[in-house]
Structure formats: structure tokens, C-alpha cells
Length: 293
Image (cartoon, rainbow, N blue to C red; front, side, top):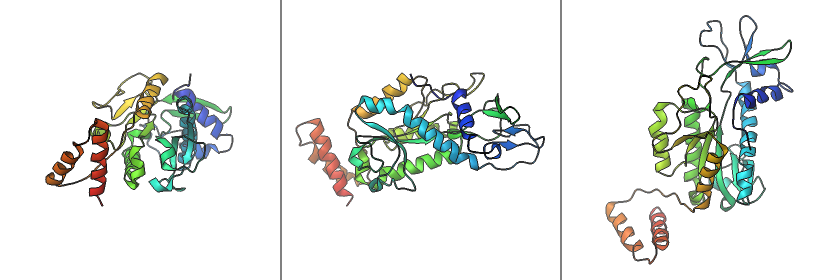
């Protein structure tokens, strides 16, 4: 069974990255020459901003999430692929899908072959001290003990995720059938509870999820779910698997429009003439899309 994000995964990131990156690219250096993943909350010395680690943790976690979803993809006869490009729905070489479940193995995909898009917003969660002398890594605290917020706890990270998902969703009608989820390794702040629920209920994003069951060392404040599950903390692979299968097994379609009440009434009346629920829905969607032209 695949191991969810925890201190072992984070330690593995640093160990593997130190094979080709310098400690200064991965850690902050304190005034007393300690190498730390984050500035401790009580640190009052001169501070710098570390940007070099971002691309490294980004590449590592995107590959990790690709592997995480591989078994789910295989179960439905698909493939979990990193860096998928599909320019028709706004996934370009400069802004590819972090991970996607597709019908075929290619990186360049047609929209109709993309079954799910997974945006990855993960970062280093715990604080670590690296001791160069013996290359030891010691966990010295969770995110409550250090300055700065990791992953989905950052407002700029949430806004980037929302913006990219909306760009995909509205780029082309071909994106209307593809579920989009955001996977992180931290909870979200309370100020985003209502927003993520609204995004889910309106069908724009099918949810934000954390695959880090215990991000706090003392098992303290750690939200399981927002009221409408716009955010959900997955505590087991089975939970993640069930959620993914629910999104993949039923055909859904996103639609949005701003019409007059008169035009909406006409659309409903025409669609209602069809014989089955599915036919009524299809006619309704066709008329909504025609009204946008």
C-alpha cells in the first residue's frame, strides 16, 4: 500500500536532493551557522528568502503524486502521467498539468483522452535541521513552530491553484467533462473554507485534498473536512481511491452561463420535451452552449 506524506517522505526529499544540490539551496543558514528548513518563530537574526528549493520540492512532489495515482489509473485502464500538455484546454508547455490520468501514455494529449487533472500544491511541512558534519537530518518541529506557512496554508498558493483550475475550466468546451482536483500536504486556513466549498458546489474544482494525515506533531488542530467537502483530508489510500473512483465513474459536465430568466425558461421548456432525464440534460446543455455564441 502506498505510504502517504509524512516525515519519512520529507526526509527522503532532502536526502535525494542533497545528492545534486548544495545545503545552501535547500536550507536557511542562521547566524550561528545552523542549516534549517525554515526560520524558527523566535529567530530574530537577519533573514533571507530561499527560492531555490521551490522547483526542487515541486518536481519531487509532482513525481510522488504521479506514483500515488498510478494504481488508481491502472484500475480503470488508464495512466498517471506527469506534465501533461493539451493546448486546447490551456495546458501549454509553460503551464502543463502537474499530473493527469489519461487513456494513453503520451505527454501531449487530446482533451477527450484526459480523464482527470490533478494540480499539486505541496511543500516542506516540518522544520528540519541538517548537520553537514555527519549529514544528519533532524526534525525540530511542525509548521506551528516555524515562520511562514507551507503549501495550501499560503494564500498565494491557493490563489495560484484556483486561477489555474479556472483557466483550464473556461478555456474550451472540451474541458467541461474533466474533473479537476488540487492535492496538497497541509490543511487550508479558515478564510478559504467557504471559497473551496463554493468552488466545489459550482463544479469549477472538484475539491482540494491533503494527503498528509498528521501534519502536526501533537495531533492538534487539523481540519478533516469543510462543510461541503471542498477541502478533505485523506487519512488512508482507500479514502483517496474511493474519492477518485467516484469522480471517474460517472459522466459529469460543467456548465455556466448568464441568461435572462425568459431565455432560461425557454431552455427549460424545450429541454423538458425530451423523453429521458439524460436526453433532457443533453438538450439543456446544448441550448445553454448555443446561447453563449
